[in-house]
Length: 124
Image (cartoon, rainbow, N blue to C red; front, side):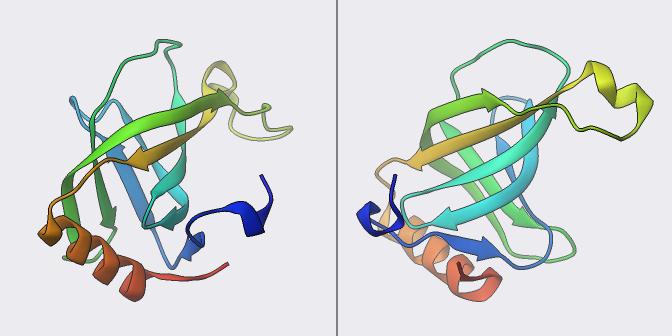
């Protein structure tokens, strides 16, 4: 998809921003980009199972700011090519990228997300 066709501008996280899909945090990874419409993050999976998740948390390591239980829907969850070099024990794991779309949020949720985007991201 062309950058100009997107409804929302993608923003790059500043620092260590992570996303965690709810249900015992089975998928937790570093955010690649965020917008008012959703986010993408990369994570390491040792299982190859797919589950439905309907809520996500966003947080920045070392910060108090933490967004809880944002309603979402997984748009894609793809396996990434293996790294050419790296830690031997991780060769049996799967690097994946997951994209989620935010579902209808409360007004408070939208305000908190907008504050998070302003404070912890920069333009792409």
